[in-house]
Every structure is written in structure tokens, then in C-alpha cells.
Amino acid sequence: MKSFYEMCRLVEQEEPQAQDLREPEMRSDAAIERDYDDRKKLFVLVGPPAIGKTTWIERNAPEAFVINRDDIVNQVSGSLGLTYDDMFASPSQDLEIGHQDPKYGEVIEKPDYLPDFLPDKLWSKVTDANGQVFEKLNQRFAGAGQADKDVVVDMTNMDADNRKMAFDAIGPTDHKKIAVVFNFQGSDVQKALMKLSQKRAKEIKAQGGSKTIPESAFQNMFAAYEPPTAAEGFKEIIPIDDRQRILQALKD
Image 1 (cartoon, helix red, strand yellow):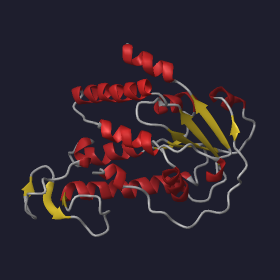
Image 2 (cartoon, rainbow, N blue to C red; image 1 turned 90 degrees about the vertical axis):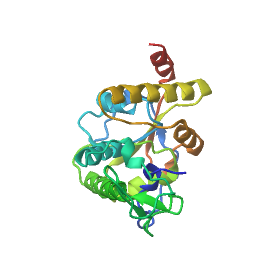
Image 3 (cartoon, rainbow, N blue to C red; image 1 turned 180 degrees about the horizontal axis):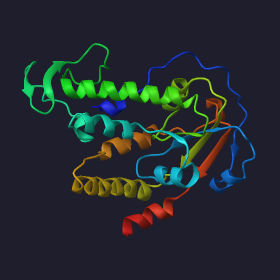
């Protein structure tokens, strides 16, 4: 069953204009500082959790306008007395409509506007909270197109559909579109990423929070991966291969 995280995909808007089908320029991460193109840049980070996207931003785009759904989830959940994990909770389907829970609100029928893959019964407070996340995320995307600075879409962005929805939500912009693609290939690396995520979840829990990403979610991301192409509108693709650091981090 898909989670609210997978459900809260942006609504597709108008059809995109024809794209330049020439292959985008490939360059190294270090080449960013030598880029003499004075246009602002729109970096789309592509990679699963725990791959090093936040570290990349700190090193390469510390002043950028960052779009990160998890930040919004934490903001909304904290304001409502919920945790990150609470935002994906659903009631037992055996409970009756109207059943009250002091933390999650009441059991409600799934609204018609939500996807069929969600359970038929949901928690009212969780449903409302995820609606707030959806609205705030769209507002963040809309603000990026007018930002007079570089923009970073800091989400997994693993397939072309999700990347297209991000571009559609941002709208027309003169920013130069660049994909930053983190190499996660190899079963040993993928297992390491899942273990690093579990380690991070324990650290967050020790601090009173929660952020659990099940292995099934990782497997779905790995299977859904589509490499970015020029047809999507990218002018450059920056490959990042940090797999040795990831494997070493697991040993430390």
C-alpha cells in the first residue's frame, strides 16, 4: 500500500513546451565553480534517502532557494503535535467511522479526491495535516520560479514523471536546469543506504522525533529509477559517485 508521501504528488498542469533533444552536457561536481554561465541555476537532485543530497547542497549551493518536502512535513507535524511518522498513519480498517482517537482525530471515509490506492478509512487529523503539506509544498514550488537565486529541488526525484511535476509546479523560469544524479547502483550500496537510514532513524528517535523509511519504500524507489535526459529539459547532468564514502560510513 502506498503512503501519503507517495500520494501527495503535485497535480500536473499544462503541457510543457517542446524540449531541446540534444544530449545535455556531462560534467563533474567540481566543475560547478568554473561555470561562467551567469544564469541562475535550477538543480534537481536525483537519488534515494541517505545518499548525501543535503551534504551536496551545503558544499555547492549553500545560499540556494531549497525545496524539500520533508522540511515541510516536519514543520506541519510539529505544529500539530505529531511526528514525521504520524503523518503516514492510518487507522485499522475494522474501526467504525467516527471512532475518536486523542492523537489522530476521528476515523473518516477517504475523500473522493484522494487516490484509490489509499485505504477506505483515514484519520481526520492526518488527512488535514497532509493537505497542509501539499498546499505549502506547492507554494514553495511557485516561489522558486521567481527566486533571484539558484534553486535546489531536494527530493528523491527518481523518475521522469516526478521531475516533470516539479518543473510544472515551478512554472516558466529562466533558470538553467541541471540534474545532479547520485549513483546508488550495486546491491551492497543499496543495502548500506537502507542501514544508514535505519541508523539515522534511531538517532532521531533518541532526540524525541521520528523518521522511519521502510525497506519496501527503498526498493520501490530503486525499481522506479529513470535516468534524467535532455528530453526532460536538462541542459546539464552532473554525476555524483560517492559510493565508497557510503560504504565506509556504514563501517564507522
